[in-house]
Length: 241
Length: 161
Image (cartoon, rainbow over the protein chains, first blue to last red):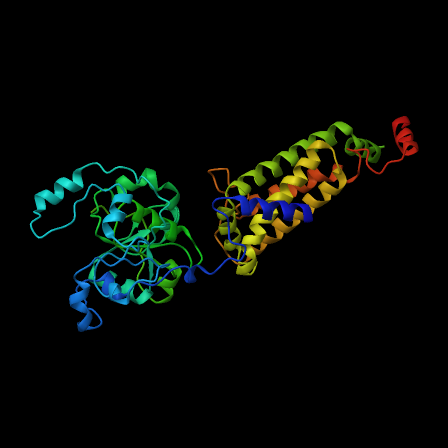
């Protein structure tokens, strides 16, 4: 037993993706997005920061010491540890140009229809943020978010958030095109799974960010928390759009 | 007479070798997947809600190596009885975990074989599989499969019989 423990610990240290010996609660691993980031129509917290906020793309990397003003805009909430949104798009292999006021819907459509490359590099520590139950419900009520169920299909069919799509995190590459292929990259996505320590929603969110989605958050409480709060759920397959 | 026949069956060296190979194969296969992806195994352990959060990762790191070493020892015929006893103890622990999860109504994957695409959920079939593995270890616990701990005289006597 002692030999097995020693070998196991030594092997873990040698791994590139070594597991931390002491597991921290998932809740402590990244920040919570502010409501104004999820819903751009909500005004920033303080007016004095507003003009500064509009000048730059906020980057919300949870592990970085970001300037507080960067959090106040309704801009991308998919947190990137690199400071520039353009860099994150490059990482995701997105061909998208920076959005400008002169861009027409036709231009945007042409960009979206271009086949996107697979993410060239997914180990850039690109991360999504958490969201609270209340904020997720606000987005649900305002119909600004698309909920993405990270659980297996049978769990989704048993019960899910109304309007949610099923995208089992372990089959992302097979299901992505059919489920989210036509979804705009700036659409707010809220991933969830079965409980606060279920990492499927977290992994799915990070993979969606790596694929170029700029507004992805994780409902850490998952479906049980959603139900406990008295929010609605439905069962069965998703109805066709 | 009947009890002698049954005893002979269980004493059969051939049966013991088959049991060793099967049980060792199961545990080595299970261990390899968990060693390759300890994070997935740790997530599965989390699902059982038995261990305190702080110990989940350490458990996920160490247990697969215990399984691997036990399986390799069994397969190679070294310390067979001790290895079989260890693997029986592991199986009893797994049965406790699965039974506990079932009693609490947890709908979770067992995390037993992370290499397999079909991740089994906790249920009676898992318990039955663990019982089967324990039964396969019984001939090994009788110490027939290896020559460890036997004196030459004892070996000669058993050979005469």
